[in-house]
Length: 282
Image 1: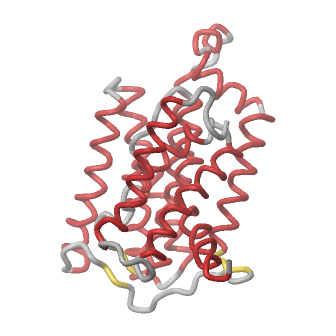
Image 2 (image 1 turned 180 degrees about the vertical axis):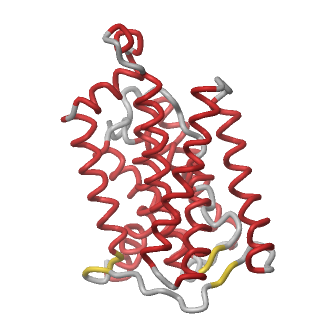
C-alpha cells in the first residue's frame, strides 16, 4: 500500500486540469453546445501564463493572462457559432488548431524558440499539505458550479437551453445569451487549468495538454453530466495516467505500451459510456 501512495498522490494532481476543463465544458454541454475546443483553450491558457510570467515575474499576472486569452478564444468560438451560425464542431477543431499552431508561431516571435518556452525562474505554486492550491481550487470550482447549476435562476435557464430552448424563448429569454455565457465560463475554467499545466512544469511545451481537453469531454459524459460525477470520473482518469507514470520505472514492459495506457483506457471508457444506460457515475 505504501508503494501505491505516490500513485494516488499523482492521480490527484493529474486530475486537476481535467477537472477544470470538464467543469467548463459541462456548462456548454448543459446549454446544448458540445465544446470540443477544450484542448485548444487549455493550450491557450498554458502558453499565455508562461508568456506573462516570463515578462512580469508575477504569478497573478500569469493567471490573469491565461484566463483572459482563453476567455477571448472562447468568445471567438461563441461568436462564430452563435452569431455567424458556423458548425460548432468545425469551429471547435479550428480553435484547437489555432491554439496549437499559434503558440508555436508566437514563441518564435516573442522568444525566438520553436515552441518550447522555459521560465527563467521557475515559480513556486502555493500549496496546502503538500498539494498545489490549484487542486483545492478545482474542487471548490466544482462545488460552486453545482450551486450555480442547480440553485440559481441562471442554472435553471442554462439547463433549459439544452432541453427546452423553445420554452425559454417563449418567456422572452434568449437561449444564445446563456450559451454565450457557457462558452465564456468554459474559457475561464480552461484558462486556469492551462496555467496549472505550464506553471507547474515551469515551461511551455507544444501540445503539452496531451489530449486532456479531449479526455475532459469523456469525463463529462462518464460523470453523468453532473458536477459530482466529474470529480469521480476525473480521478479515475488521473489514476490511469498516474499508474502509467509509476509503471515506467517498476514494470518490465515496453515503454511505448506503458505510455499508451491512459489513451487505451480512454478508448475503453468511451465504449463503456456509449453502452452504459444510465451513465456509469451519473
